[in-house]
Length: 177
Image (cartoon, rainbow, N blue to C red; front, top):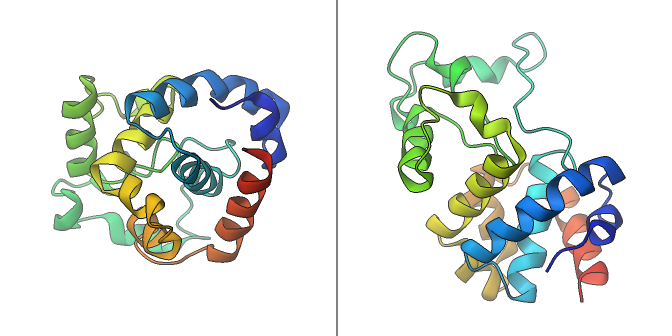
């Protein structure tokens, strides 16, 4: 479905495109991200969230990103123990965040990301977690309905980086035909 050249056309480096093409392909197939609207929207969101496949772990820096301190003690994320905020920072290509989301992803994928959060940084798990999140949050249907801004809110909780996401969607539309 997805090729290294198509990922590169979206601004991903050749190294990262090679690293993630097969895991993304398998994850997309498993979670029915198989139509053009779904593929394009998924890859645009993944490319933005991961810095064009560069980052599978949130860059943790309270001095530059003081909002990250708000992860600590967030009951809605399941962060109930001291240190949960940093331990369960965003990981994977869509940045799974919070103990509760790590636990849900663990159940869905049959891997223990709660005990071993670093496993979400492996290409296969990074891609699978993104595709699982996508499907489990109704993103296939939103992509089919071309509700990209609503999709962005589901992925991001808001519309941060919307202009970049839209540019990536345009790049995906021209490179994935």
